Image (cartoon, rainbow, N blue to C red; front, side, top):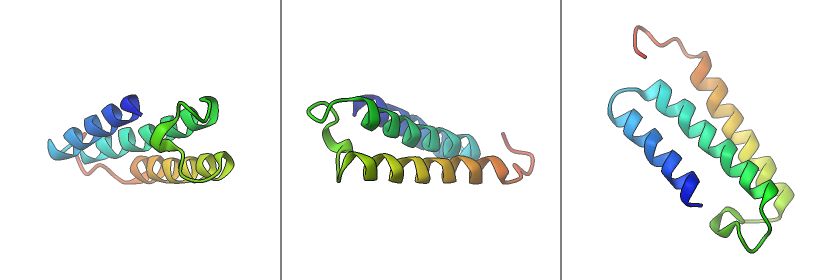
Length: 81
């Protein structure tokens, strides 16, 4: 949970420093990382990543993370990084 939180904080810092596209990519990556942790870690180690059943949690996190990454990658940066 701490690793995922650190990645999300990095994403927020990027967005606040006007690197919104990179921040969105990092946020999506953090969501995919959370899905990987939920899939691989035992139930007593996942903490707040466990909301419903393992299958539902992983599917939801992968769907949202993939959507964020694809949207962030597909938007024209308009001269920003």
